[in-house]
Image (cartoon, rainbow, N blue to C red; front, side, top):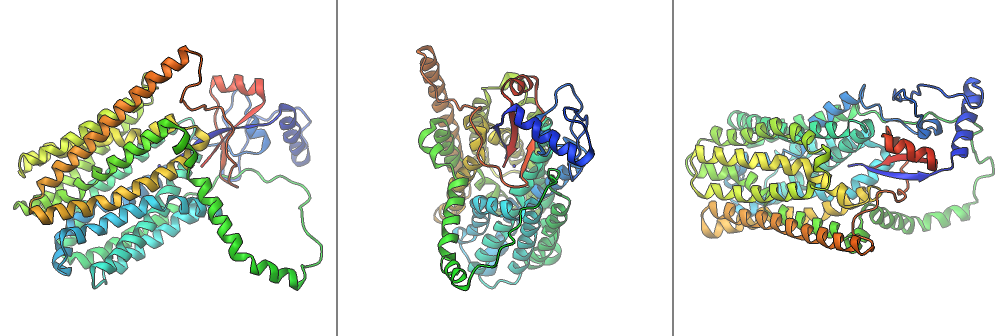
Length: 540
């Protein structure tokens, strides 16, 4: 689901000379003549208007905001349905895994825990792959890994083997499919980005709605081993979705290629390069991790630090109820099909609610208030877990999944929006990468700790009570901390001192090759670009 907009300062005269020089060499257009439309190699077309985006003239890719982008949006929805929602549906097979491997609750809960943790922790490595291979190839690689991981899980003979196949391999495949899909969606949509992100977020809800029904049917007909094998084949559809995510590229500039016609290096130089290969690979790895993890923001940006701590603490109990909801219901004599229906209802609530919430929160009135709406939603989500403590009846759990689904929709719609508000857009990708690493720690230990609690008490409702306290306290922490930061900033602004708010006009980080596009400017951007000669560029 991640985009960062930056400003690449370029003089107006250089932009015009480069642009019109290319036009003269390619099409014989006179210098100073402006074209109305510009089509990229992959079919991106600029919007007609009085203002001509300098980025389009300089050869940057223009986001189509439609066209083939709708196909990419549909593929992204399917990828999110198959990846983000999948770990929550493992609870359908929870009892079978316990009986098959004679494992305790804590041992069994490591399977979805590792899967979810690797899905988030692999973000920086996924970014390196996207930079080297592109979004399309990385999504397809993730589809292959996740499919092979689930297929191999059907042949495992111990729960430890399941940790590797279903946890590490499948989770890494989910990471490689999910993050590039969200990345390339940001390249295709700029002006309609809020609407596209709101629609893509329904993919998780779609998966929560359909995968439990499919998993329950396969469990009834084939058992857990056959179900894992079929689900592995289903996950291969991520390869199909990745195939349609064709990249947007700028038109190639015509000119003399820069080639080295000199003699090949001598043998001793080649040997020296081979000896230093491991050192260069290690240096490249360290540089890549530093680029994709914003430790500077964690140390010097108090808003990002507070937000990262609050989200990390929230994730300790946020996904645990989804894993233990079906075992809790079946342990209290509810039919497996009705218990799986609860997850489907949760997904249906998300499907209906997320798009309107996404459009609603993009309205100007909510600007600057996103964090408080988000914190209230986290608080309500945490308190809703206490409903399960009333009883295990179907109607009680139905009320629980309805309230949980509504609050979960708000949290899902605003999580990345708030992150964009608290960091500079040029630092958003690295800030998200570090946040994903921090989340993965609590996502990893949350379900096993809940399993230990169940093994010691023998009751599931204790888990929901603890999760209620953890998530609700995270919401209160975010609300109080940001209110204090806002109060301090108001005092500093009155005294004429700099505040902790991010400055959106700072220079962007270096753009990855083939991963940039020019945004469709607003009226304010037009005036600023015409006065400064700046070029708006987006990168992941």
